[in-house]
Image (tube, rainbow over all chains, first blue to last red; front, side, top):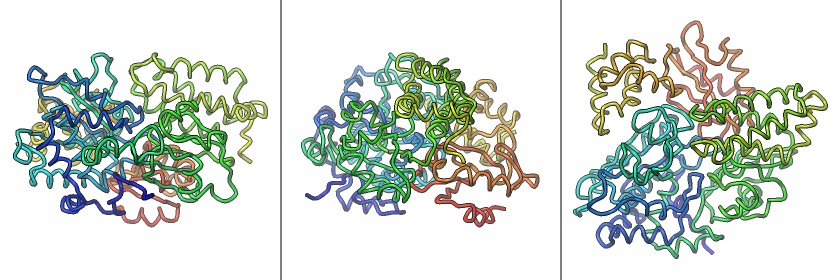
Length: 426
Length: 154
């Protein structure tokens, strides 16, 4: 069977598709179809039927998310559609591929999504470090505007959509939906209380939808080819393809678009070329730094939302970080918790005050100064930062690698404590 | 005082938002682009331009790690210290940089040529270790490769 790659099939390394090239391979055909032949409700319906789930980490059904936006003449205006391109989850490098390789598919995904919720204004939110993405997107936006795909009366229809680019100045928190909205309003990227949800009261208090880059890129092929087609290209109950990535000490780190639901073994061995010579697989974070470890016993589970959750982790961003047997797991987790402690926005106490303690305890253990009761303290922080104790989901995410490391690598922690040194250091 | 050019660019940015102060991050970037950093005086000037209080603007400026509220060198090195780069040789690269430049993280060389800062994941984990110098991304680095790259930045 021919492998379907609706997101990356036309991407050439190191070069962005121009408007002409994108049109030549069927680009903006879905926009023609949607704006001229479909109602906004029909676009929403096909995305709902496709069972597309958010690719930014949470995996929330995209159509369902859109369906909460108030519609009709009474709805508050303007409504906003925002592309979340603040890719900052350590170990994640997939949206960059789409932004730099096929910017028009991102833009077309935004047009279609905006049309579905009848949004008038849109923002592409990019992180500071993505300079090339910003350059490529800005150029593509100008091309799309002059070709009549953006701006007033798109393709001669009644529908108008203005698109703006915002490049950020740092902070992991900007990737969190409500933090991103605050950042776009020119404020500190602290989270907001929900409800009200952004769908009803988001950017500048207006109905807003924030979707991840990869999610938006799925929308044009869904509108063009239909919900059943999108479901059919998957290997699992979760539809579509997924950009999977592998980094760490494997032979060929990289990012590949594959049917949703490939196994970790297939990813590691067939695509990433296996572990580097002399190293053994010890564990992996399947979807970025904020996901629980998976280990050898999980090698053959399908990497989709439901099955990774059943194994006690999250598909997250789908970009895996591999821990090998010659790397100290305590130092590995210390590096992660250093990141989370530094990037905590400071809004909620368990995260702001808890993570620096976690970081210090892990450092002490790594340096041979840990005590056995420290493991209980670490576990208690994992509990305090758990779901429901903070405004945003980044706090529970911050302790997912910690709690699973305590579960799978407890012996290694204890060895550090008992031997008063790191067994991995000579 | 803001220059005419800075004011013009800030006014251009304001057009993208329904309220003036929403452009605060864009305005800080404009000033930093021309001056390398954002001084207290600039905070006051930008705040006036955006019709917001200097304290409110400073709360924004100090939240985001890439708004520099202290002077930096001619070139800013941002070395990725996140997990994939750490696995692939970040520590070796950092030690090399520290020794070569004679500075630690957060410091600027005496000749003002380089400032060295840590940065979270640069989103290029398959080509780790990586760092950025000013607006340029450098990846698949070794200490030897980095030496050559540094020569391009005066």
